[in-house]
Length: 279
Image 1 (tube, rainbow, N blue to C red):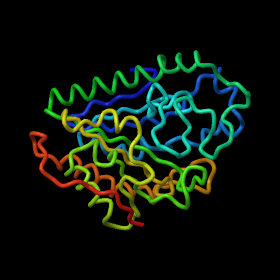
Image 2 (spheres, rainbow, N blue to C red; image 1 turned 45 degrees about the vertical axis):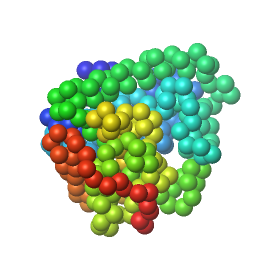
Image 3 (cartoon, rainbow, N blue to C red; image 1 turned 90 degrees about the horizontal axis):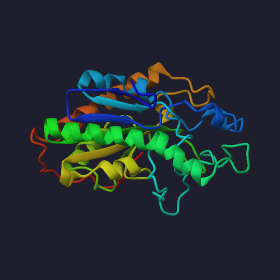
C-alpha cells in the first residue's frame, strides 16, 4: 500500500478519482499553517465515504492521502492557470478559498520547495493514475475517468451566490464522447437537485489532461456542493446521512449511465451536452 494514495482495483472500465479528499500534511509544513489553515477548510470532505458504493459497481478507486495544501493534484505541474480571469489557489496554495493566508509565515516556501513537492507527491500520484488508465484501456478497450470533488456551496471569493448542487464538467465537451456528457447531463437535470454543465467548474487539469476521447480515454468532473450531504453551518464538517443517502441515489444513476453510455466497444454515436444551468 502506498503512503501517498489508496487504490482499489475494479472490474469495469471506470476509475473514480479523488484527488482532494486527503487530509495528511507533513509536520514541517502543518506547523507553519495559520490557525484557519490548520482546519483544512477546502478539503473535499467525506468524498470516499460518499462514493463508497462505486466499488460494488465494479469501479476502480484512487484517492489521495495528502491534503491539496501540500500540492494540488488537480493543477498542472507548471502551475499554468486553468481558469482565465478567475481566482485560483494554484499548484502549491498560499491562500485559502476565502482569500485568507494559508500560512502564518510571510515566505512559506521557495521554488525549490515547490519542485520537491511535485516530485514527492504530485508525480507519483499521476504516474499511478496514468498506469491505471493504460491498464483499463488494455483490458476493456477504453477507460472512463470520473473525477470526484466537492466544495462549500458558498465561496464568495470564487463564485457569486450559491453553487448549484451538481456541477458537471466535460472541458466544454472536449474530455469525453458526446453521448457520455449528454447521458450524465440528462440524469442531473432530472429530480430535485439543481445542476449546471460546464459552468464555473468545467474540469481541472485531470479532466482536461486525461480526457482524450480520440484515444479511448474519457473523463468528466463532478463538483458537488457540500450542502447536499453535510451540515455546512457546522465547522466540524459533519456528514449528514439523511442528506447523503438522497444524494447517493442520484450519484448511482450518474455512475450507471456513465458505464452504459458507450457500447461495449467504446464507440461513440451520440450528441454533445451543451453548457447549461438548471437551478
